[in-house]
Length: 353
Image (cartoon, rainbow, N blue to C red; front, top):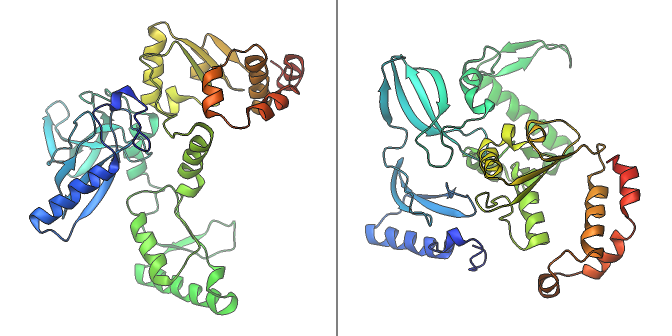
C-alpha cells in the first residue's frame, strides 16, 4: 500500500498508517496512558509496510495488526517448551543480525545458550536460518569478542591493548571530545554508528545532549538510498516483495539470496520447483547461478552496459507496455535515445557475454 493505494492484492484488508496512529491515540486516551512507546515492525508475511506494536513498560499490550491479522504474543521471549533430548529450555525469538528478523529458537541450559536454530513452526521462515543466524551463539561466546573497554598501549597497527575500567574509558572519551572541541570546534566531531538497531535511540539521545547535528545512524548508507531509489524509479518501495507464487520468470542480478537472504531464496526455489524460469546475472558462480536456467557471467563492473543493452532490445522491439509508459513514465524518449548507443554487439564487447 502506498499513499492509500493498494499495490498488492494481499493488502486488500490492510489499512494505512494513519489509521494505526488513530487507533493508538484512542488506546492512550481510553486508558489514560502517558508512558508508552510505539514500535513499527515490518509485516511478517511480505514485509511491504508496517504494523504497530503498542508498548507499556516492557510488555506488549496492544497490537494494531497487519492485514493478515498476525498478532505478536504477550509472552514474547517466554520459554515455549523443553527439549528433553538436549536438556534445554527453548525460547522463541527472532534473529536480529539483519532486518529480515527470521524466527528462531534459542536453546538455553544452565543460563548459557547452547543452540540457535530456525523455528519450523513459523509460517514465514519455515525453519530456515542463514549461516549468520546459526552462528550467533559462536558470536556471543567467541573468545575474541570485545565485552570490556580496551585501550591501545602501543602504536597504530601494533595490536597491543589492555583492559580498563568503564569509568576510565568514559573519562578518556570525555577528555578527547573536549580536546578536539577546544582545538577545532564542536562541528569537527561526527558521530556515526552501524546498521540501525534498537539501541540507536541511546546514540541519538547522546548526540542530542551533546548538541551534535553531524550524526550518521547507519540507515543513511543502506536502507534510505535503497528505498529512495526505488520510489524515484518506480513510484513504490515494494520492489523487494515480489510475488514468487505467481511469477513465471525471475531475474536475480548481483545477489545470492539463497545464501544471504534465505527467506527470499526459499521463495525463489519454490517458484523454481513450480516451473518458473531463473536468470542470474553475476560474475561469480553462486548457488543461485548453479540453479539458473541462464547464467550471465558478465565482466565485473559492466552491469550498466548490460542493462542498457537489454533496454535497447526491449524498446526497439516494442516489448514494453506502451500504455503504462504513456501514462506513468517521464523521460522515456531521452531513454530511447540513450540506449541506441548500446546495440547488442557493443554490449557483448563490454560485458564479454
